[in-house]
Image (cartoon, rainbow, N blue to C red; front, side, top):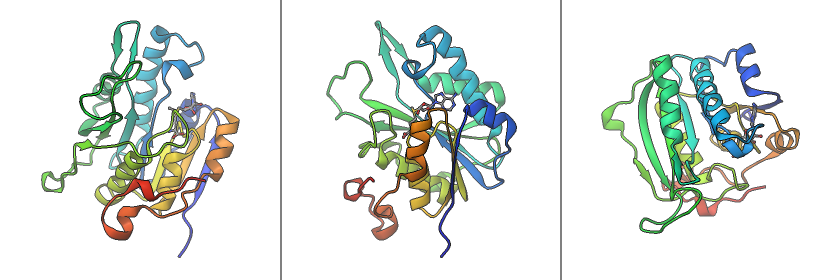
Length: 233
Ligand SMILES: C[S@@+](CC[C@H](N)C(=O)[O-])C[C@H]1O[C@@H](n2cnc3c(N)ncnc32)[C@H](O)[C@@H]1O
């Protein structure tokens, strides 16, 4: 069996997306940077950048492919910054349809959290692909799973997203234009899919070239996702 490919570019994602067409059978799975990672660290300057970046991602996604965003809101100075709303603003301006919106629990229901809410969003969009109603998957995911670093996607959520893209959207390649240390890329490769990442930070890009998951996704082995039996290297 041929090994799935992984390529990581150390570059500005928006420049890279403007200059490179994604492979025909690619879908996107990404997590756009928070205001604290933005070069100005100023929420009012970050907000329009975030919407424009989400729009660039959606416009770059092949028409029959899907783009999944994994985003966690912020609570800042008494104001809720709703990133699902911002991504949906981008989708509305480029005519991309919302296929589903899942909630991933970061804390048990009933527990208060502070700077970040007790859940993250997974939102899936496409220009042309449509999800069959009888193929519905869970809307509330009970846990994130282990994280490779504090700003990472949780592995259980990443597994669910990549599995959906492979099985429901016929993805053969996963592109993460803000790939961080490469969580989405490693999960894609573990599912047998090629992966392309872009990351501005050279050290993270280097980690993204090497990150591997020691075991294949549990759901592929026994049909029961079990994020706790994974190891990260
Ligand atoms: C929320 S983190 C992504 C984390 C990633 N999902 C993971 O699991 O490691 C966002 C990443 O985007 C990167 N980034 C910020 N601005 C960027 C840009 N203009 N182009 C490419 N990467 C950028 C940051 O360095 C950071 O690693």
